[in-house]
Amino acid sequence: MRSALQQTEIESVPAELPARDEHIAPAPRVSIQAFCDTVETAAAIQAAGEDRRLAKAHLKIQMGGLTAAQEAYRAAPTPNVIILEFELRPADILAGLDSLAEVCDAGTRVVVIGRHNDVILYRELVRRGVSDYLISPVGTLDIVRAVCGLFSAPDAKPVGRVIAVAGAKGGVGASTVAHNLAWAVSHDLSLDSVVTDLDLPFGTAGLDFNQDPPQGIADAVFSPERIDTAFVDRLLSKCSENLSLLAAPATLERVYDFGEDAFDAIFDSLRATVPCIVLDVPHQWSGWTRRTLLSADDILIVAAPDLANLRNAKSMIDILKAGRSNDHRPFYLLNQVGVPKRPEIKASDFAKALDDDPIATIPFDPQLFGTAANNGQMVAEVSAKHPTAELFQQIGQLVTGRAEVRKSRGSLLTPLLKKLRLQS
Image (cartoon, rainbow, N blue to C red; front, side):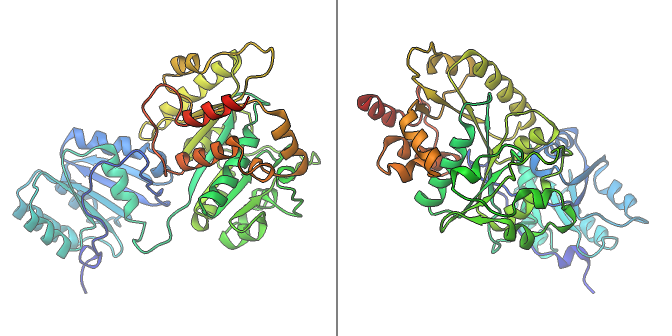
């Protein structure tokens, strides 16, 4: 019988650093043990273990390289993933792997880190079943990509992209933005999407989409033992061909207190079957809302142009940047801009304080948004050719990775804003 190292097929190859919008699927709940020869590599692996995509993995790091690994597994089972750093010559690396293969359990996957950019060595590692070979020095994202790639089969359906939308303050229209964003992604980009209303007592997604489903997200969060892809799929309400809704009950018969990981299984089930999940996150700061934002693939903060929104947006962006050091910073947009007779903070001042431009500035238009809300429609349904409908389409392209952020002062959507101003 071949060893575990020899049974495992190569699943990925060394890659360049990721582009800004590269989507790396999170790793499942696996155990990872790393054996390092240098403190630099150990530090990179430690930083990778703190990345949101490895949040479910259990990571242990030891110094000592191959010698420590051989000693550790003489009488102990091997984990799901072993990361081995070698400061040895190619011949010694291969000999060391052959000896380690004798104590590896079936199913263990091995990632090797070495200093030799050698095609012959790489081919020999592949022949022995090493899952990946990284050339040192390695960065945090090299480790994240390598480990997560072990559990993303090339022919598997892509894991869904989670976009969390939250308001910097209550009443700024974050839910309206989230719902119109999901509509634009599903209709204009033809991407299967789900709107998940996380404001269980007061959620408005059902009203905005003119839906009154008999079941929704409460059925899942209060029955965690039943959650799987089939169960969650039955809870979805169809809004259109490519858009579904996981509705909030919007009732006050019970108190909605949740643990930090209460929604994890629901999000995992949605990821497995839906390409785009838009989370309508209520304006509150609790363990589960913080965890939801930190674990999302992309974050969009909605703010109105006043001082409280500026303060809150900065606080949110700062804390989320610190907790997501390997992700691009959260996006933000300004909503309800241009209320008559209301003093407002300029977009340029927001950009200066937050050290980033808003991706969009949505004008105050009570007729358009009021009509849509009262009719249970989206902006594009009320007026398909309205510039604001096109605005949501371009926001959808950006947050789903289908458009690039322009490095110019002003927003990505500046041409549209000029058109809006001409119409006002």
